[in-house]
Length: 341
Picture 1 (tube, rainbow, N blue to C red):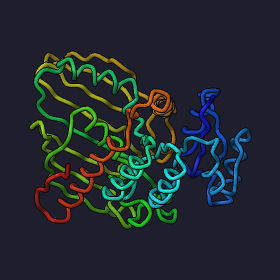
Picture 2: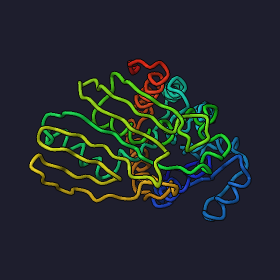
Picture 3: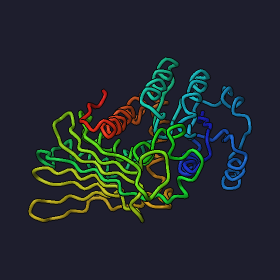
């Protein structure tokens, strides 16, 4: 029997999820899609006429033929929906972040654990071919002894992006550039290099945006392994450039940039291993391929069929939220701060 999926939330992030689900048929079928906004329901129906759009999310959640849900609402709505979905024995694939705070994210993980349902998070950058290739190189020790890492997210969002009600607010989103944009690249760094122990940071809002939360953050990082690193993240760097992680070792430096991967040698040699791809760094923030989204969903389906945790489990998404909170705490206190574990 195919899995039957419910899509909750029809905002900007919905397209790569739905296109991926349609491509994965007949293994999974979309039972229905829902948004509380009539305008978004109408726009979605016009774009995806093959998918049923419903006005009654309560009936959909209670439908016993539906076994999983893609939760794509703004962060402030997620904990409430997870309560109801878990009680109805629905497995959940959630957009990042799990919730606005790490404490709320931890509650979501506990809710799903207690109900015996699987929980995954859409950190699609982990599934890119370049990421997988770099992970193998690190496991093999191909870079030699690691020296430091530089993490850069020089993105751009015009003011009209933040003019949408709730966007960039603590109440709806939980924060600004760190939890909404840079979270992907930060999670990727932790995925590759392990947890961060301590941070020293500055953060704030530049004159280029009117918004409640930060559009700029910079920090020094000390990883649990002793590796040193730096972070720079903003949505005020027009026209926007690809996110970048550079890991420098004694034998080579690996540069993960815009979905591409290259190796640079001390003698000046450069080896291009994976070509780059669009990443939505600028005003057209959904301008990227959906292949990595499809890979996350496919692994989620595999996990359900095999009775295992998804590769992008909910619990694996907690460290990046702890890191973001430590960066902002350090920026407020003016001191080095420990990262919760």
